[in-house]
Length: 119
Image (tube, rainbow, N blue to C red):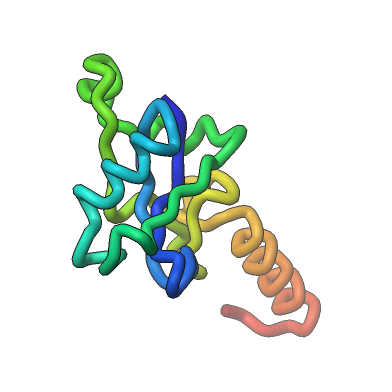
């Protein structure tokens, strides 16, 4: 199985996307449409899927029973960053943050300590 991001081409993945596990892009698009039509996409012709390469952290979100059975499936709400809401570009850490937001938080905390602020 491979990880795909399914979204509506009219609004883009920033407005909502699904995590799809499938063997091919064609299969991923069919699963995305069957699972998400009406929620994330209105027209089949607007349904898009994009392969997310080098993403082992996403594969851990797949349903193990479905993977073992070779069944393609989708997640409407994959694990996403608690701060920015994004997913797919990097693993979400134990604090619920993507690496970019974690780095920003650490920089803010460092700045707060330097200026004498307590948060």
